[in-house]
Length: 91
Image (cartoon, rainbow, N blue to C red):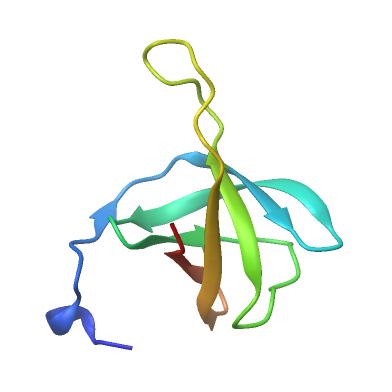
């Protein structure tokens, strides 16, 4: 994985609520630490960390400006640390 100097996408520190769907565990609401065009980092306070390579689904909790629900996006866990997990968007 590239270090912060070699990242493909600019990271933006942004805290928003995300609906995270984990295999066999269902949906939980978590918060982002940062987000980019290629993925996001989720803070998983008391939630068991999914292993690297796990495919999950994520969706913004808030409605879009036109009142529609945000789309569900597929992502994969590519990084894990004590604070949470880094996800790479698959679509």
